[in-house]
Length: 255
Image 1 (cartoon, rainbow, N blue to C red):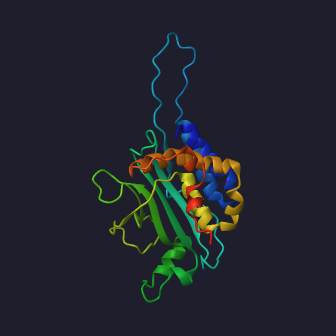
Image 2 (cartoon, helix red, strand yellow):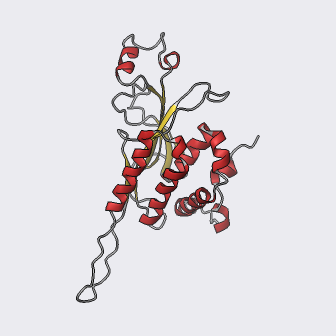
Image 3 (cartoon, helix red, strand yellow):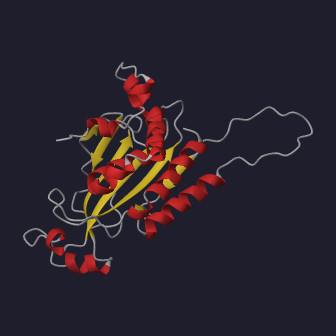
């Protein structure tokens, strides 16, 4: 995935998910776009002699948890039962020929402002409601991330993990020092993580989104980047047509 590819992905998120992102989320996308543009190599004009072309520096996409890609609150439904606010943070280094060699972490948090959900009278300290209100009136109910293992780290190389690093104001009750298990999961791009969030938590919006050619094309580009190398680890060779369509869509239970 080139710098232009990841910029295209961010612009697709900005344009196609605009109505699902709150002001903070829209600002996070714009900040990420601006930062990636600053990573472009500065062109040299009219060189006196032909210079040997240097390889471009690898890009790095960072959306910090303090300024995350934040979605609007969901609607309560039969599956969700409660309204949630979701956000995504990430640290993604440019893959090398589709193989992740650096950092690749995409973290998703589910917050709620529903006190009947975030405060458990039988388990939580009496000060929790006061602390939550002092920090914006929301508490993290679930945090998980899609990650690439560090050298020597036990478990699947590409994995999904519950919990992770605690941040100020989350009040998430899952202890940070519980670091296993790590579940097998294929690597995702930021756009693929957004696809998972939208399809799961905003199903009505996804019905129209999955018909959008620009969205589908960006999903295909992301899958062509990350999936072949992952399946090669398993001795599986994919045809191009196998990953042109959304993998999540293929695996989704249609009922």
